[in-house]
Length: 130
Image (cartoon, rainbow, N blue to C red):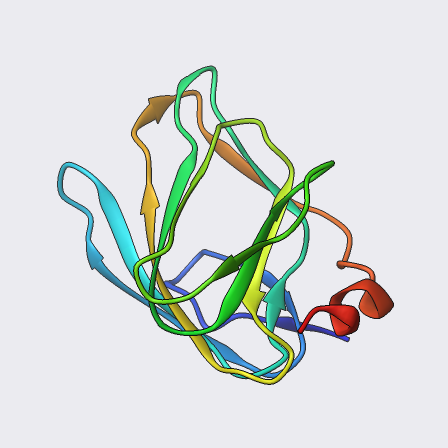
């Protein structure tokens, strides 16, 4: 099932599972947010587009989760794990099936930026992750 993530006004983030929460704490120089996912809550596949620069950095600060770039194996994230997601790269991220998960999401500065929210992650594949 898809749920709308609790995000800043005019921001829609498609997620699967239970609710999550996003709190933006910096819009100066670099946009950053603390994002918390309840167990089983993940984003849909999505792309952060940019014509120059851009992309996203994720820094795990609590719990256990995953990030996956299309065509690559999922990356297990625990506190201190940093994942760099290049611009124009299809990916998803969120909590492990049995754990809450919190990360700092850093919006890498760039030009011509936009986001596309895509299809849900395959439920059977996600549930197979430990």
